[in-house]
Image (cartoon, rainbow, N blue to C red; front, top):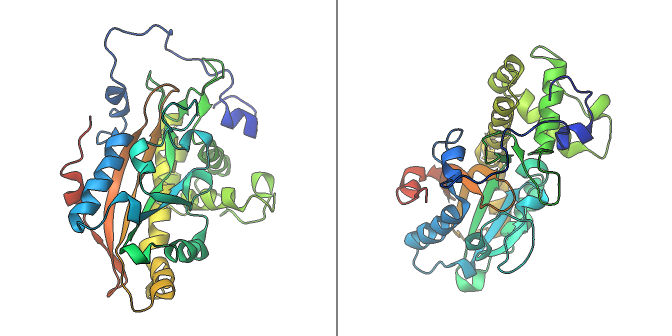
Length: 318
């Protein structure tokens, strides 16, 4: 992104960024080998979603995808739409995730759960109580990785092969704001000036603030000129902020506890939460997922209990 006049068009679509891949398909190619250079524990998104099914059923044999309601907090980017068999759509969300009820659309820009407590309350109240169902929340900002290993980019269908698309474009714009203002620059305010001046663009401000408030990420983003490294740092800062607003107690009560107690009262249905990074790939390939955690809500304490180790025990890369 260096040496270019900043605009949303240039951030969202990396015009003039040349690919190092010459278009020829090598005899043996495994996209996972490329993805794991950046995310060593990544697995196919299909296997991740299939594992969600088997693990939730292991908690309670009565659970199946048709009585588990999914809240999907992923970016509104078209490449994060669901995959449908025999349909010529753009989505990379796996078929095995489609099996769950819903999804309730909890995300906006880069998967941050912009629907907030009101959205969580609405979602929780939609549980299939007559079938003894459960709730599943998936929070995942996304990042692109091209088949030749360019991090923060992907190749979209119908676009020129060498015009790489910054993914997530909103995260790329937030990175540019952070770098323009510098490590010691003023905190973002809304509405503000420049990219933050538009009063209808609060979701973008939220992403900027998530990165700014993470001092380690902010410092590291300003310290490197590598766009891929900047995007990895920003994506994780956004994921971490999203995780914290759901799980961390605020004034002694977590955001989710407020929604849970209001929705259910004395009943205590199971709620599962998983967060991570959704990894988009060049059009024509299947996406990947990096799992940060898997948790189950404890209504007695109002906190989430970590079951990440158990969840990952049968989560295989291929």
